[in-house]
Structures are given as C-alpha cells and as structure tokens.
Length: 52
Image (tube, rainbow, N blue to C red):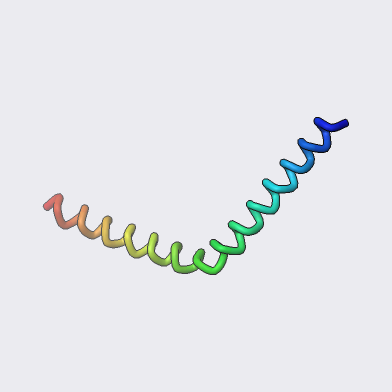
C-alpha cells in the first residue's frame, strides 16, 4: 500500500509540474510560431538566392 501511495504522489507531482510548465509556455506560443515562420521564410529565401 505504501508503494502505491508513493507512486500516486509522484504521479500527482508530475501532473502538477506539467500544468505549471504549460501555464508558463502558453502565452508564448503565438510568438514562437511567428518566429518559426519568419525563420523558415528567411531561410527559404536565403537558400533560393544562394543557389543562383
């Protein structure tokens, strides 16, 4: 029973940690997606211009 209780406490702490990390990252998602799109477009343009 003690092993099961310790396993459940560990699982609860892991879930709480994931939730807190999500609350931290969620406001930044739109900025990260925008930055990724900009980097991909600039990389594509650089790749096209360097091939000529």
